[in-house]
Structures are given as structure tokens and as C-alpha cells.
Image (cartoon, rainbow, N blue to C red; front, side, top):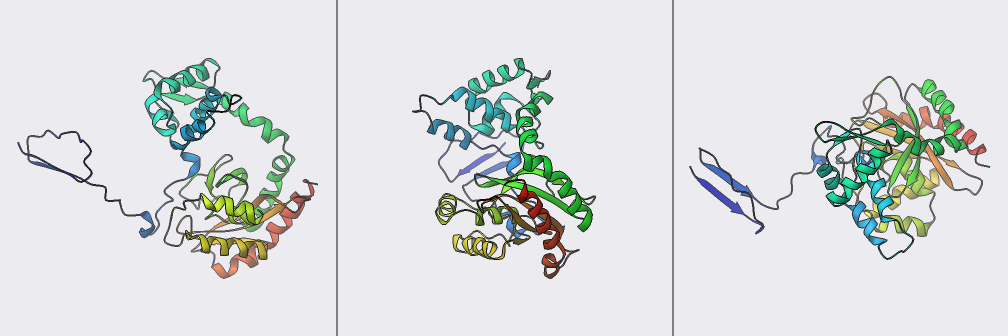
Length: 314
């Protein structure tokens, strides 16, 4: 038996045992980015990712006597579950949130007693339908959400493509309504509550364009853009130019920046103060619809629907 270990970062590694010669090579060399892979799916759909920054954000409020750390941790635990990870152990939830295992265990125990999560025989947890009640009040009370669905359905039926509505939430867009076409065009399943990065999506661009210059600068200052494809704009100057162009034109057209083969066009839904309260878009398969046809085909029905939705905002 031969064991050879080569370490480039001075960190301890587990020894490998084998009946045949083994060479273990470790280093800090980064893996190749997927932007070089054609048809590569986005690396980080935010609706499927709750990162250790949850724990960091909670810790940032440690000096606030009115901040309930236990409540914040419980909400982070609920957000850790997703379509990609519907079933997780305490250790997995702890890894995804950055919250200590003991705290995660208490959160899951409390959520289970209240009927929001269930535990199986393998000590894994899943969300229960009662969780839907947490978001029902918003969906039921927001006039924009309740009235958007028939309009999105109408746009989708008219252009025979998917039509969605989203709002800006931090660095992401949050889907609050959607009408899907019969043809799936993305490698990600999108639904109400899904998140995507704002900087490289058409709805995100028009929503960012609705911010004041100070607000936009603040958003971009802490942004660390991920190049999802070789077309993704990640330089600050390029992003500012694209957002400014969306502001001047009143719409944003994004071509395969989030996923190769996906194009989308979006318009803002503007309230009485002239602020972009939401955005609606149409997404298409790039091979089927030439870039030159996007504005002509989809902008008129999108603007008509956005005008009707704006009336609800007063």
C-alpha cells in the first residue's frame, strides 16, 4: 500500500487508506467557471440557496435589544428548504444557514410542534403545508398580486410565451406571479417565491433602473456579480450603462446572461410616485426568436398589461 499526500494550503487532510497506490493532491486552485461551458445552467438560483450570510446578518443585530435572534434563526431555517433540497437533516440545515446545530435543532423542534415541519424515520425534516400560511396574508391582501394573474395569463396566451411578475428584494428579484407557457425554457423551475439575481435579469434591470442614483450606487457597491454565462455583464461600468439604457428606453432586454438559450424582455409597473413597484417580463428560447424581433413582438402587450396594473397602485 502506498499513500502520497501533497498539500498546498497547509490544512490537515484525512488520510486515504487503500490496498492500491493512491495519490491525494489538494490545492486552492479554483475550478473552471461554468461561463465557458455552452448551455451551462446558472450556478446559483437564489431560491435554492440560503448561505452562511444568514448567520452573519443575524449576528450584525446582536447589539439591538429589540432584535429577536431566535425568531430570525427560525425564519432562516424555514428558508433553507427549497425545491432542490426539500428534505434535510439538522447538520445540512446548519451547513446551509451557518447557524449552530444546537440552535437549528431547537428551531426545528419548535417548528415541528407548531406543525410547520415534519420529521421522518431517518431524522430528516421536510416542510409541511402549514408553511403556506406564512405567505398567504401577503398574497391575499396585495391588490397588485391578486389582479396580476389574469393579465399575465392574457399576455402569455397572446404571445405564447411565459410571462412573470417580480419585485426587487435586496440583490434579487422575487417572483410574485407567473403564467407559464407549455414549453419549458429554463433549466430552473420558477414559481411564486423563486429568486434570481437582479443584475443579470430583465426584470431586475428595470427595477434597478427605477432606483435613485444614490440607491443604485448603494446596491452596486456591495454586489459581487457571478458570471453565469460568457455573456453576463459583471463589470460595474457595464452594469450601470445597461441600467441607464433601461431607464431611458423604459424596458430592458437581456440576452442569454442568466442562461444560454434564454432571452427576456421586461417593463416596469410604475406607481403614482413614478417608482417601479414591480416588473413584468416575457421569456423566450433564443433559437426560436431572433433578438431583433423581441421588442416588436413582446413590448406592446407587456406595456399594455403594465399600464393596467399601474392603475391599481393609485
